[in-house]
Image 1 (spheres, helix red, strand yellow):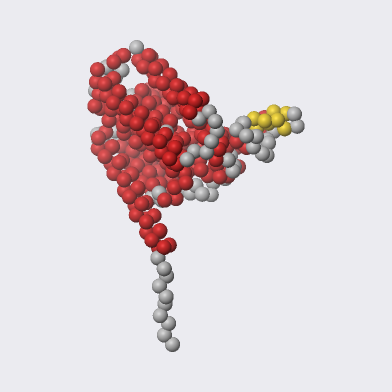
Image 2: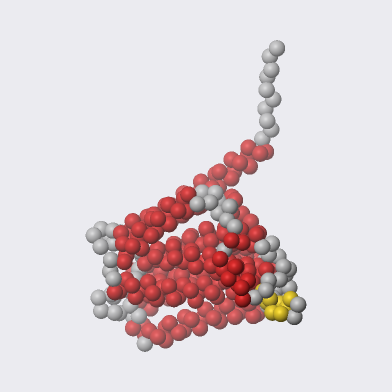
Length: 333
């Protein structure tokens, strides 16, 4: 009977996406920060409401959800796992936002068309992550030791995130661009919001399509890092998938809300490094010394809070330093 629950959730997501692009944002326009904040609040509110639904679904095992023998979940545990997974995926998406901003800057994507790229990028991300989650569940069910591999992968990702800089990325060197050019000629200009156009009578790809292609490829790379993180919290496929979906659905509005202010959150990336490292250690210890989900959530929220507070304090100090006059020096003859 859980097939009806899965189907209902997919229909809900498709309906929300159709409402987003087909009704509320049918006409291309530049997103304001206020509009982006409204949408971000809407998606967060929907995630919280769904978290409440998760509690009742698993507490009463409606449609048979959470009642698998040997893997039974009560409502409180399921709701806590969903919220923890959502926080992890949402926080990791902040690094993705910075990279997307770099891509848009590289291709000089007009602000009025960025929403279109992000919308179709989210569609592709949902499909890719759904397939990766199914593969991850299958691997863990068949090879229990794979959790150690996932844990080591997360720790390696944390180290890579600490030493790799994003400001020197060159999307033009992405092999997908060279591959796309083999199949289609490339238009050097934009043709409105179109991904395809005509050049000398032949079907060609636009710069907007190249930006979408790079956004999709980077999300795939980020998914390789973030998908194992959710398995450190829960192995329930429905919770893994739904927490990921809600985090992704809010990515577009979160981008427009934060893209112009990312330089003010300089220590967020450092806090994400510690979050990934903690989750990786949690995964490695899952069999011998399991860390309770509530403790994990507290640790993750604490690490993120330290990063946010440090960023705010640092930004205020920089502003104060710029505004304060330079004291004249006393020169003695």
